[in-house]
Length: 518
Image (cartoon, rainbow, N blue to C red; front, side, top):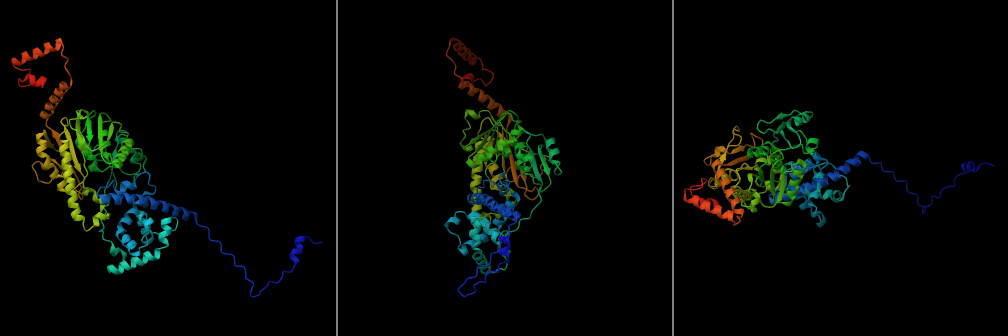
């Protein structure tokens, strides 16, 4: 007997029924090609990258709408939490560049429902990638939604080109291209953690390093060097801080052991520079009104290891100059809110909606006027602290209304309170605009010549005024110390009265009772 398998092989197959009513089985569907793992990873990375970019774009647009940015685009992108920094930065910049066109396309196509209108930043980012950037896959809900409506979006874009009577999308772009002027990378060494020579040695492994000629703890690196993920930066041993910003604390010149007030502190780079100059000794009160910026300030202080900094969540203007807690205050750093016009190119302000608005000129005038009023008020308040000997005022603005005009307006108050203008960095060639007597004392930086616009003014209390203030402080201490009415105190009081009748006590012009008992 043949084996079972062999009999099956020799059997003749039954003829198939080819009648009309018999359906043929469908041919097997082709197996889809297996996706390349690298492509899948790239799609996943792009998916998360768009969402990171959308969060930052939301912060940027909200700050621009309020005319008060939390931070620049670069600062937000180069936070440690952002993974693919270069790609995210490029995506945000390109989306902002094309944003007026993207908004017009979305309005013309009318594809958005209420759900996606609540996530408009993610829609802007994804629409840019879909129409003008790289190919996207439907790996997320926003991507799926817009990919299914790609034809409608492209049709809307074509209508806009016809309506504007242009042939290319580039002709719709309203922002002028800002020339990219190479600027050195400045790095300030945090001497609370690392000495300058060690920093030079470590950074020298990556690129050439030079010392700055004005700020002792500032280093100059070639343009374009990316240090955001460098261990010295992430550990707080060095800070990526511009030259102008680093000059402010040096101009104030605080000494170890002083009590110093930083009036408008966040993000805190100048605050922790003060701490380093003071060698971690003394006390720095760092004021900040905005809670989000308080958190940013606290993080900067923590990373820097500045243990002598006390963060004060409140308005500097509400601090009472006669509060005993500030009786030992020696110096104030005032870097108030300003237009930021001196660093507009670096912050990429030309990409923001407010820059291209038709109403920008009018709104800028109103904004500058309001800023100037606040700056004058803050500087007058700083000048009213009786024990303060040095005050530095700085802005990253190029406008006279925020700089020389502010100084000119407070000169009567400063003279009345015993202050005079001093000359920070006498070797610096650019000084103030000649709009008041003494403008040669203030310092200016030019956005073209010096790669950023900045302004610094330094007030110093005259020495004789410092002596009078010390005497007043001693008198206040006597007043605060109650004198027990004992036999001994009666004898002392009697001797004082007798000495007053014989010519005074030597520390005043004869008015002994006014000196000792006032």
